Length: 136
Image (cartoon, rainbow, N blue to C red; front, top):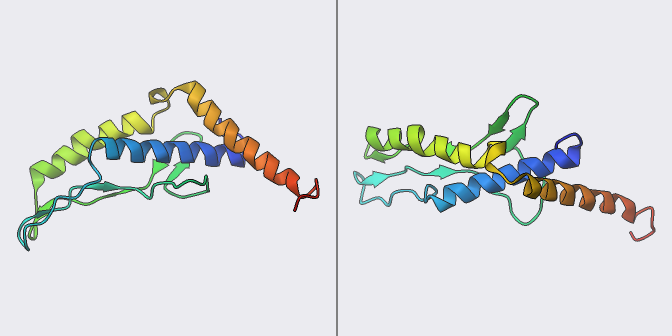
């Protein structure tokens, strides 16, 4: 699926979109609203989510043996104290669920993955032929 640069970028894009969608569906991208200095804050997962264009980014990287996802976790806190039970819930329960639903190949429909990767590859091929056709 990622034997060319365009296909690798497309697959990374798909995984990043999936990660962002799962985080949003589960409401994990919403930080706790503070209630003053000592009120609860944080507790959200954030990743730079792709926009309309498929571009090479560094939020998801694919290697032959593993996938690397780059995101932040704002540890939940009240004042200057970490809320341990809430942090445990995010890191031990919610995060593995997000990963298994977004970054693992078996969580995706193979036909949709292939369609996305093929579409991006076709787009890059067409862009490469514009100049030789005298269109730019």
